[in-house]
Image (cartoon, rainbow, N blue to C red):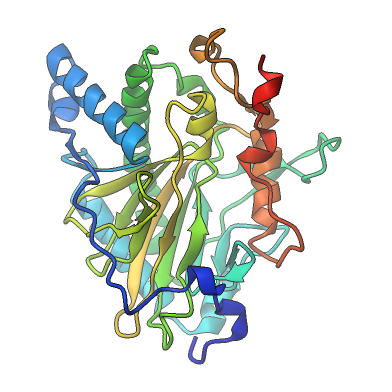
Length: 358
């Protein structure tokens, strides 16, 4: 990744304005989960956390958590293994390269909003293999398996990935319980969606230095299509969030041993827009490489995503018609491999027009 190929160049409206310093976010809430980890039966403490999660989810769609229970040594071990993997020659990394048929493993030509991202990635699923629809066509009921690809010369990468993923899954379930409580639902309301058939996956991101960071993005502006994202980032930083109150892009300052949590599209639909997913993007720079590790918590492929019945009333009718998560997911995945001539599938395609609610 030396010269900037035109495929990387963002539309002028989305290029980084180097003349305008973007403020680091001071308002993104920082939530201390120590009470949840150490005193889960302390009702008063849990109610306080629930209120913090509700406020953060409504106002930002993003928040940070500390004292989250994920052992730091598991993250450090994975970071070290990731650096070793991405530091290899390209031909070595491409031995576990993914494609449209086998969508797990290494990839360096991913697109977001039809523009190539300045990054290379390594993807793996929490459950191996993971069941997923065989095609994005609605009438095709065939199911296939996605199986992880692991580099034979780095066995420590697989070990580190699997150990870390299990630890973060526990955190994800705890966060989903807080989100459920914050919506007035039983703590375990979402558990059934994330059974042994869940489609959760993790990604190792490497953003090399970019010679023209004002033209390209590590990841273009987007919203996460799943339920919840748990992100670990290094001290370089680069994540920016579009603030809901004014639409400004705000840099998320790295905080040691903190995770960045963001609400995904599925929670927006489940909550009937009580909470909304928020646009974000990743900046690159010309001097330092950057690493990040997102954990995408996703339900089983056969899940029909729709507003939860408990949150629908005559005054607040359902805002979305149901859609199949597996079909949605693989349709979105298509755009990672090619530039589409039309907008990729989004949840707004399933939104019920206001006049049809009456």
